[in-house]
Length: 503
Image 1: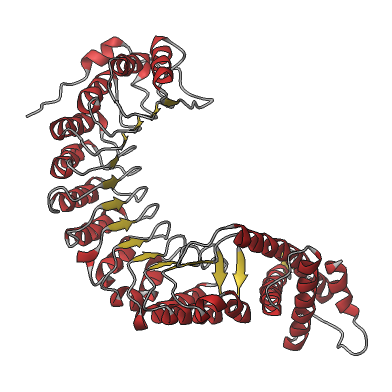
Image 2: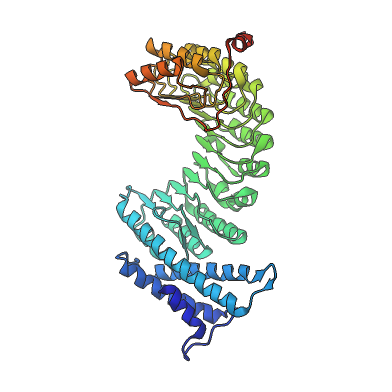
């Protein structure tokens, strides 16, 4: 019905100007008015009335802008240019389709917001489907945060804001400046042109910088790059109490990593740094290492899938080893080709922080047998009293590697999860080593072991491991690829493995 009503605008009654392409500002405003009216009526009929007509106007504006952009992009074809009347029909049809979807999403968002219990001191608009929040709709959405104040945690994600809405958010931050501690801006720019996105970031950043002192900041999933990091400069340069920063999945290059190091004014307060899924590389890792070296209170570093190689890995690990004794609790470097040459560097970090290290996640880092051997020796020497999770996935852990893990971690009192996935060298014999040790009481607190794609094919090792784990209530994860290679790692290859020089 909505699409049909919009289509009639092309031959509107005499009191309206007949629409033509390209539509004038006045005609686009008329379409937005019709769309807002339809949105309000449809939400009411779905028993999910919008909080105010301002929300409907915000939906209508976002819908019309997207439809107009779609028509503009579609007017040119490979064979020439569409007729104006055809482009107009595309514009109106797209507006109708988008409005129907926007109404459905809005209803889901409102239902989710009503269903989710409000955490005391938390103001969260992220529930429900993704949506554009613009202008007057933003003021309606954040009315309580402005009028009541007292917000400690502001969560904005899963929505996309225009500059006017960013101004409202900045006002929320100013009003709650005395209580605001955590600002979650993850995924707030989807679908925005770069210029507008940078202005949105700058507007919010200035609002925070004026009077707030926050402790936790999350700007993940915004494709920031160096431009986005620098757009946040007012915020980053003003915060002297930041304890946790998250720049995950943001296209953080070497230049962006250098900007982060440059703009954070009080690294001595940092406790957590999250940089998962970026493209920092060795050069970027060197900048992060410089930041870590200035962060004596750092307890958690998550730098997974960031294209770090041997040189960058060495710089990071040397910085971590320079931190005060027993301060690092969480080290996550998975999916970086750090190489086996840095196995000893990781071992030094383990020796330095072994008393409090709780999570050691170094899967798929190219450590190989020598690197794992060095780390196991360090773990054995510290006793790993606090260690809860270990991930050695895809690091050539063989039968001898399994033996080393048993010796190093078999008595660890807190270890609940052991990840050994994608170690094809482990095989049935390696599983049997683990099973026998567990049958004798090794890994007393273990809750889960992952041996996916480790060449377990229902043989003696797999059967024994599953049996002892079942008797102890331990979950065995053993996923297999359909095309898993039928490759055998025989006894001769195992005997040829070079002995690790423990000196």
